[in-house]
Amino acid sequence: MNTKTTLLIVDDSRIFRSAIEESLAAEDDIEVIGSVWNGMKAIEFIRSNPPDLVTLDVEMPQMDGLETLKAIQEINASHSHSKLIGVIMLSSFTHKGADITIKALEMGAFDFVRKPERKDPRENIEVLRLQLLTKIRHFASRRIFGPAQPHINLPPLPEIRPELSASLGVRSVMIGVSTGGPRALANILPQLCESVDVPIFIVQHMPPTFTESLARSLDVRCRYTVMEGKHNHIVQERHVYIAPGGKHMLIEEREQTVKTVVNNQPPENGCRPSVDVLFRSGATVYGKDVIAVVLTGMGMDGTKGAEVLKRVGAFIIAQDKETSVVWGMPGSVQISGNADEVLPLNEISNAVIRRCLSSA
Image (cartoon, rainbow, N blue to C red; front, side, top):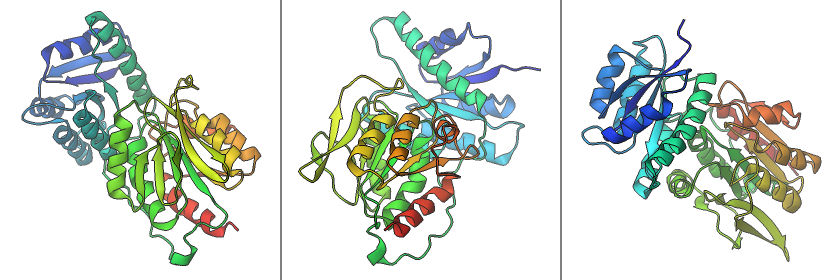
């Protein structure tokens, strides 16, 4: 039985295709079974020899990354093969590349890596290898993908009187998320913004530029203003603050005014931004009047912060294993004993709303 993860490389640059193949050549658990230069060739290949996983360039001629991703999802939905194919997007550092990548993640791509742009080609290959190995092995360890859909069907909201939507007793919602985050946020955040008025703070593990694109995408979907957090910005109700890529975001209260703080302090849990940093500050500023949510993502970021929040009486929700793309972060919170509820993604918004309306 072949236990290797089979991979198809899709990129219009022959040099870059060769670089990916070379970067993975020594890995015993990964087998590159094809390398093609555009989306149409990729779909032809997949129909005859479906891989486990596709690395997919964001920007290509004739059939771009989003069109190819959609076609792969249609193949998955047709059940015309015995396994469902995952996709890792390969993105440039440009704003256009980041925007397209966020759309792909919201559509159901597993994850993305940035194309390295260092002067030394050997260094580029090593950076690429390390990025890809982490993503590929997490994909191989947790294959839960069904037909990818842009939206999960949410249960109907309970009828909420507008005068109750000020979220009695709750002063903030804080969310930590990583792998699978853009899609999860696109599904729960619009519903939350329709029904609660407190500020929402989000740490999504992403590099610079990509969090800016994520904020723009979510802003279009939500009643709230969704924005990257800025240093020394006064926190307002009906606003969502996303930690900027590559920086920590926390909150401080001075003279009864809460402000966001953005800094370059060292990473925690290998992460900057870090969920733990945000959660600890939430415990200091809001105490028990926080609802913290830990969504899909690899690693343990958020566990120690959730413990601090739990000690001051905050309410903690973790996403369940079945609906998480990677059950590292929420699983760690559950195992630590600090989760008050463990819920599937499509129940989390209603749970937060009920908690807001029942808190006095």
